[in-house]
Image (cartoon, rainbow over the protein chains, first blue to last red):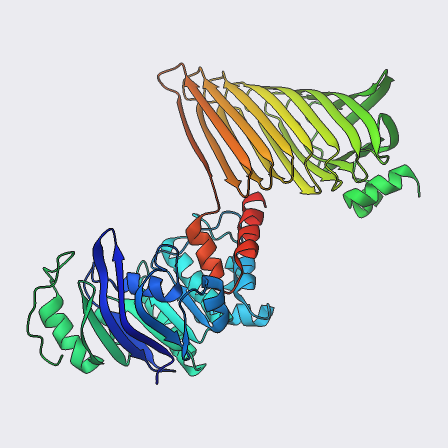
Length: 247
Length: 307
């Protein structure tokens, strides 16, 4: 049994099926990836698991550690150990990096906060007193967000497009942080359409048009994703029944 | 404990006032209870019926290096404090003022300030007004200032309530800005229960190349109300300005914002932005996804906005 189980999960928004019968088993302590083209429903899947506003009323069942997540608030899910990193992290006017990381930390120790910052390539002496607002670039905010996740020490991390807005040199910091999370025993679910990010995972699920069309280790998913899905002509259109190898 | 000590302690400036190079003036209601001057700065006070008049002068060319502390407080629960301020900053001079308005026991207090401020050519004047109120909300704060900025001068004012309830507050500032002068006005206020906040900030960018920035950050919760009126008028070539008002409401709080920009010269340019609403959902969910409950997350976001 995985730490997170999705059983026939569906979501309809504005009379359109955004998720359609997703069944996943996320193994504890592993790095997983949900991969697929734009519009596949990957980010929506993360929003449903996190319980974000507008995504609470799903069909099917989601269980974390065997307990149903239905009806649980975002805070309660976080207290149970689930957290999320956004593709475009929020800006907080006036809130310093230190305050933001303190709010995320379970014990607020300076040493842990500084260590987390170093792991994502942020120098504490430069960034701790800066505001998490528009004076930080998208890439810097992404690193601050990842540092906040490291100090939180989640059991399950949903990470949406971790390479978005990140330069090549900093990407290695992000990948090292993922490895650190795994070493700490966390389970990671990456949401991505990038091959480089997909390669950080051990297992992958391929989605298209709200459906799960393939699952397995990345050696199996990667060639199919590279060969058949990119470029994809299914964006925002109902999936036409096709025979998919390995399904 | 003497009234001066009570006010100084409530303002948290005991240490600063021990420094002989730091000028200060402490008023309890309408009486001077403590003062200290430094070279280049003159302060003359006179008691008037129902108030006190203070003339503050910074001599031409004087740069007051250490921040000057003005402590305008009331130690008793009921009083009317009326301060008539005349501030003249000479040319090529500079002063930074930290005004502590301290009303820790307020039950029924009126704090009225009428200020005329003139900043000379090439001079700098910054005025941070920091309020400490009681939790009763029994306070009326009515600051009014008329400001004239000379050529190349810089004027910066910031208003913040650091502790207690607003009560009733009506800020009314108006400025005329000369050539190449820079004006910045920033107000950060949080209201709760039945607090009422009214902010009127107006600036006329009359000099060539004058710049003006009006910024308001207001949060209202419970049944508190806020009305913000910011107006920038540009009448000269190269005048630039921006009005930025952000208000967050919770519970039954009500907020309104009226940003007015008026341009009367083809080479002037003014922009504005105003946003009123509840706490941003993405900010809220980010903090909640780290384990904060909704109220704590919302409080932290508002604290950041008002920091």
